[in-house]
Image 1 (cartoon, helix red, strand yellow):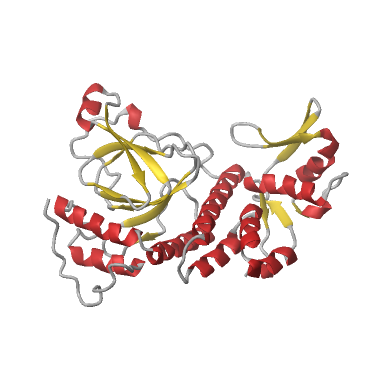
Image 2 (image 1 turned 45 degrees about the horizontal axis):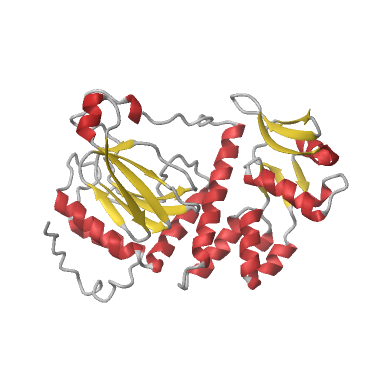
Length: 363
C-alpha cells in the first residue's frame, strides 16, 4: 500500500527523531481528515498515514511526556473516568486522544470499533485477539480470527468496523495510547441487531454516590502511580516536572516510591503531615467481628463490601476509622507501631476509601 507524501514543511525537517504532541496535531490538521461533524469516513491511505505519524511520535519520550502532562491535567480536574477518557480532543477534527492502563491479567473484553482508530503501545506488552466480524454477526457468537503480541513502540490501526479484544497477559502494567475518530462508537451501517457478546459490560456503581467516588479515587491513584513509574525512566527534561506532579497528586504508595528514588523530594515527603479523610463525606463504614479478625465494611448500592480485615488486637484502629471522618495517621489507637498505623491507612487509601489531604509541601 502506497502511503501519502505529506511534503513536510521546514519546521518538520529534523524533527523525525524528536516530536512533540503539538507537532502531531499540526500534521493531523494537514492530512485532510474529515472535520468534526462531517458524516464521512477517511479513506484507508489517510488512516495508514495517520498511523505512520503516530509511529514516529510514540518512540519519542518528549511526545510521551507531553501526553502525560495533559493526562495529569485530566486527573487533577477530578473528572470521572469510564474506559478511555480522552485527555484531549483535537479542535476542528474532533479526534480523541486517551491513555489505556492495563493491570496484569486485565482485558477490555471483545468489543467493536465502528470507525477508524490508531493504537500505540507505550510500555510493556499486550496480546490482541481479533475476530471474524462477518462470521461473528452471522453465527451470533465470537469467531476467532488472529492473535498477535504487541510490544512497546508498536502501532496498529483499524480502518473499517472490526472486533478485537486486547488483554495484558504479562505480570506488569501496560500503557497504551488510543487515537480515535469522533465517529467511533456510532452504529455501523451494516449492523442490523446488536450482538449480546459485544454488549458493554455493566459498570457497577457508575450512577454516582459515595461508593462511586471510591472507585473514581482508586482509578486516579492507579493512573498516577503508573505515570510516575514511566516518568522515573524518561531521559527528557520534562520528566522532572512530571515526577513532581505525580508526587503531589499521588497516594502514599506513589509518594513513597518517588521519594525513595528522588532525594530532592525527601524533605517534602518527611515534612508533610499524614492527614486522611473519607473520600466522600457520606460514605458509610462499619466494623464486624470475624473469628479472630475484625473487618471494616464499606456500604455500596449492592450491599456492604469488606474493605480490610486485621487481627482483633488492632481492632481499635478500625473502630476509630469507622467513626472518624478526618484524622492523622498517628492518631490511630492501639498498641501499634508507626509502620503498622501507616500500613492500615495506606491499604484503605489504595482501596479508595481514604484520601490523603494535600499540603503546601506537595506543591
